[in-house]
Amino acid sequence: MVDDFQNMFVFSISAVEVVANVLIALLCGLIIALLYKYTYKGLNYSASFTISLILLTMITAIVIMVIGNNLARAFGMVGAMSIIRFRTAVKDASDIMFIFFALSIGLAAGVKLYAIAIFGTFIVGGVYLVLTKFSFALPQSREFLLQVIANSDNIPDDPFSSAFKTYCRKNKLVNVKTIGDKSRETMEFSYYINLKDESFGKKLVSEIKGIPGVQSVNLFFDED
Image 1 (cartoon, one colour):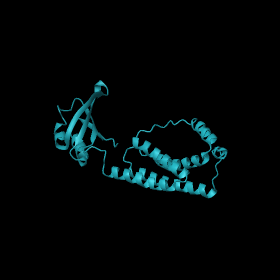
Image 2 (image 1 turned 60 degrees about the vertical axis):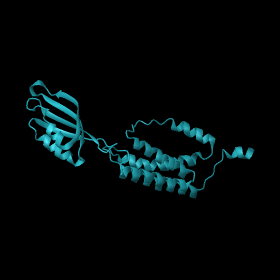
Image 3 (image 1 turned 45 degrees about the vertical axis):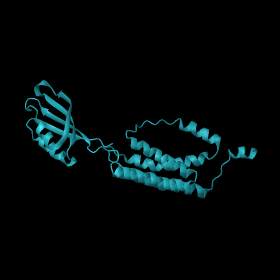
Image 4 (image 1 turned 90 degrees about the vertical axis):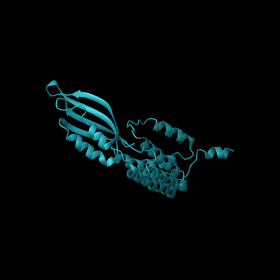
């Protein structure tokens, strides 16, 4: 009983095991990072975040090896980690998922559960890849934001209805505001639209640009 209690504060690991754990974490981290890079479809891709996923997996494995089964080290590590302040906002839910993915695989590699680390990486990564490939969570028709800036003096009444009927399933005016000074007053129109086909985006923008009085047209979308 006393020996069991004392073993809680003793942890030994060989150099070969350290290298093996870190290499497995590196391999799995590379796969996770490549998966993130391949599946990312947003507008703010960060190369540093992709590299951080690799290092996070390796660092987690090292932290677990440092702690081992030593309670004093575990409490000391918690205190040390509490000093860190994470100030970078994570905007995409998938980024949070990848962070936890890297952490969990690093934990498995750090305690020498290589089968869980490797197969877990491939199984979770494969499921995510399939769901992304078949757009599992996306609606059948994406919603776009159309922004049009036009001269208020030259713009005709209901100027965009013809283009909307041709290229859009539905449209909704969400905002109209006046910008500029009184000598050169312009109007900014904002619409939510659903295109009949996403390839119609360029044609819609081109046709609206040809309307008298239109100064600029912007079409935005947010890939979730």
